[in-house]
Length: 52
Image (tube, rainbow, N blue to C red; front, side):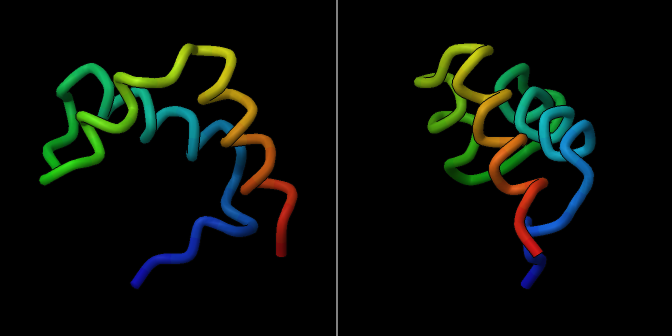
C-alpha cells in the first residue's frame, strides 16, 4: 500500500490528472477523478501533500 500523506503536492496532482485523462489505468480512480474539478483536485493534492 502506498501512502499519499507527505508525497509532493505536484506529484499527487500529476497522478490525479493522469487518472482523470486516462493516461494512468485504474479500476475506479479514473471514474472518481472525473467527478472533481481541477481546483478540487489541486485542493486534494495540497491537503495530502501537507500531511506527514
